[in-house]
Image (cartoon, rainbow, N blue to C red; front, top):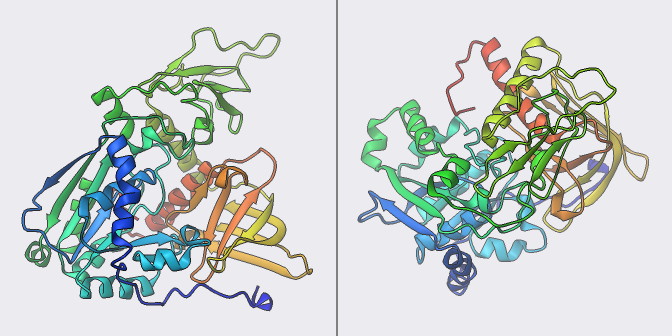
Amino acid sequence: MDHKNFERFDMAKPPVRTKWYLRPLTILLSLPDVIKHRTKITKVRTEGLKPPFVLLCNHNAFMDFKVATKAIFPKRANYVVAIDGFIGREKLLRNVGCICKRKFTNDFILVRQLHQVIKNGDIAVIYPEARYSLCGTTAVLPEALGKLCKLLNVPVVTMICHGHHVNSPFWNLHDRKIKPTEAEMTCIFTPEELAKSSVDEVNQKIVEMFQYDDFDWQKERGRKTKYKGNAEGLHKVLYQCPVCGTEYRMNSKGVQLFCEACHSSWTMSPLGELAFDEGSTHMDGTPKVQTVIPKGFTHIPDWYEWERANVRAEVEAGTYSTGDLEVHVDTLPNAKKFIRLGNGTMRHDMTGFHVQGTDDEGHPFSMEIPARTQYSVHIEYEYLGKYGDCVDLNTLTDTWYTYPHGTNWAVTKMALATEELYYHYRRQEGRPCKPGLA
C-alpha cells in the first residue's frame, strides 16, 4: 500500500519520562477501580527495591494497568502499549510514558527504548503475554524474555493479578463486581542473581511465576457474581461442542451456553463453573449424534484446552485450513484513526496467514505471514462493541484488522492454530519446545 503514502507511526521516537503534572492523574484514574474491587496487593522480596527495574505483568483486563499503577506509585514508569491504545491520544499516552508496540513482531527498536527507560532510572512495565487471556489462564510467553532481562541487568519483578478475568472477561467486558481481587508483586531476580543465571533459568522462573487460572482462583476464594449475563459471549472462546463435535454453532444467552447443532446446553454458576443441563440434547427425527465427550466440561479452561488439542491434531495431520474467507480490512498505519483498506479474502492454513484484496481505487493489497515466523496472533471479539470479530495482523510498519464474513470460522481457532503451527514447525526443525515459551 505504499502508493497511499500513509503517514506511519514513529516507532523510533525515544520514550518520554512521565510528565510531573500527569503523575497524579495516573493514580487518580486508577484508584477508583482499585478501591471498588478492594484489591489486595501482596509484595514479596521488594524491601529496598528501587527503580530502575523491569516489571512483568500478566494480562486479563484493563484493570491490570490500574493495579500496577497503584503498586508502583509514585515512581515513574514506561508502559509498553499496543498501537490501537494510542488512537486519538498519542500525545497524552507518550507523555504519561507509554511506548508503542505492534503485537507479535520482532521489534529491535523496542529493546533500545527499554534500555533507555532503564538508563533514565525508571520502571519498564511489560505485558509479555501481549494480549488479554482468552479464558483466564496463562498465554504463551516469548522465549526472548530471558535474554531481554539479562541484557537490561536490573531487578526483575513480576505482578500477577487474580480476579480480573472473571470480573471482566475478554469475551464480555461487563463488570461483574468481583471483590476483593488480589495481586502479588514479587522480585524474582536481583542483578546479582541474574548474572549467575542462564537465559533458560531466567525463562523457567518467569514461566513458573506466570502460572495462574482465574476460574480456579474464583472457586477457591468463593467469589460469586450476580451478573445475569454471566455466560454471554463465552461461545466466542468455546466454539466447538464437546457433545456432537460441531464447530461454530455454539451460542450463549444469560447464564447459558448452548449448541445450535445438537441442542446441548450448559448453565454457568455464579462461581464460573459449567453444569450440563440434563435432557438438553434432543435430536428428534434425526440420526443419533455421536458423543465426543459426555456432557462436556465444568471448568472453562479444560474445554479451551480440549479445543486446542483438536486443532493440534489437524495441524499434525497437515489438514488445518480455514479455506478462503471473504473479509474486509482496516489498516492502522498511525494512531490517528482506522482506515478502510478494502475488501478481499483471507486464508489461514498450514503455511500461515494470506490476505489479499483490492482497495477503493482498484489497487491490489496483500499480506503474507509465514506460520514459522509467528508464535501467536492477536484477535478481537466484537471489536469496540460494533465491528465484529477480527484477526489483528502486524508488520513492523502496519497493523491490519481483518474481519471475516459469514459464520463458518472462529478467530479463537485461528489463534490456537497459529500457536500450534509455530510449535509444529519448531519440532520439525529440531528446535525444542520449552513449556510456556515460544
